[in-house]
Length: 409
Image (cartoon, rainbow, N blue to C red; front, side, top):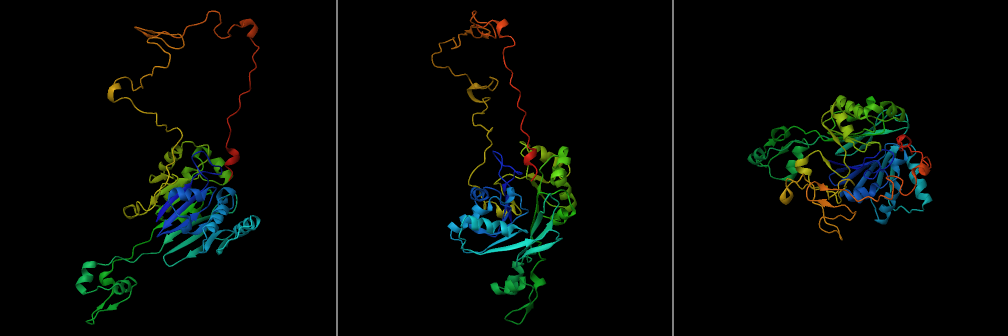
């Protein structure tokens, strides 16, 4: 099971963060949790095939969590998808999708199956397959919101290969029967029971997706003993009043859920745009629950790294704009010992010992500064200071933009 964050922003995208979406890869199938704007492009960049999407789980109907759905459906149609697509989400999801299909005259040639949950439900198993289940519980947000838990069913124990060889068990059908808990009879009439060579069942891995919620007991239930808990951390603890007002969690709230649920790993995401450095939130969460990671877009999170590494590989590298290649250290090589600064290049038209601004390099003591024009005053040019005093218009300082309007989702 591999979890890949596709978008970790809250409400509004930033230069380096996209709207909410998380992909879960399991045995070649992909399960999408929320589909913010540009989700399908992030799938491609993450190295995941859109055609492998099996089910899309929607937490709630705020636009930042569903704005990527219609484009994804159109791409499926262009790819001539034939396999049915399953949707799970709150009541109204079907109406939203069907209206957009009708409005855009999109001819969908594959089946759309909807599982909708009404506000007021307490618990539901929304998917029950042979190898895994998905359960849903209501969360505490400003509008009806759902959290999900994807859990593999217990896996059969491992077969003792040496003991099986001694007993003469060689056929695949015999191994399958033993793993299924059946007793087999060998050619000589010997009966072999499952517990003779098969170990104890192994618990399956689990993933909890909890976003857009205040702290609530339902979140703890979804995250109980989860291998990976993906939990929103929209704000820091100093803005807990704002978080509660908008139905969101702080990093401390996420850590509290992880602690009470005894989750193995907490991954925080859904950051407000005000946090240009999310490590502030990471520090806050780790003070209460140390095994916490920051969600990083396109970076896979493995439940079994030894066997899963290399399966999902990003096709692009997201680079921060302030990470410039020219920030190099010159503390080594021929410039060693010169304070690490890059040597100044001589500019065109600049003679030895002379700068273009009229200044010069003295033999001792360094640069003596640019030449001054005595006909001009220091600050007012040729204008008389008495004339210029008070004549300048001072523009009002524009206040720094706030993100309050964008954090309400």
